[in-house]
Length: 275
Image (cartoon, rainbow, N blue to C red):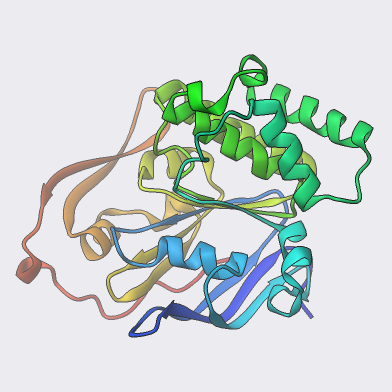
């Protein structure tokens, strides 16, 4: 019997002609934790999040607080797991406040109007988006629409956040703001966030766990500061790189050069999972 948190057991997902995620296990992720799902392009980061969200067929078990998500009706699954895709929210004439109200009405129909309004006010403050509340989505920049998309997911207060490259369209200030906010929200609500991302330095700084996928599938899982090292960067990304620390003590990945595929030496096996 699984305890509170998220775990994956033998999760397999992909496309009709190609299996992308193959029998993936993820040890229990406890409430309040952020997990970075990282790896080079086309290794299944987005596929993994979509499978957990129920947007791509999969087999195996997805357990959230001991409950198997795959057995829930779609609306109930949406209540537990909030998914933010890479695609930006549609550019429409709705203002930000209306977009958030629409998300609540579809995802949390049991809430009263007063509860909806309180939830919207809370998330606008948490993400620093009050100035966008009365602006039309078709007047916003790509980064601003991405922030509204994040607000649409978090306003419903799902137990599990599945965020696919949530900082990809954002400038440096908003990248930090998003990760700081998601970390604070997860800690306060006891929710769990899986973030597909490419920026390893942000993963090292903000995330509690890392799940590394490579061209051959699963590579490693555990504490980012223990898992991400030069051999792993060589094996998973095909680069020569160093891990150094800045003057504030934050670890940084410094990439030196790309390695020709034939120069990459195969390791004896995947790094064992750590809890």
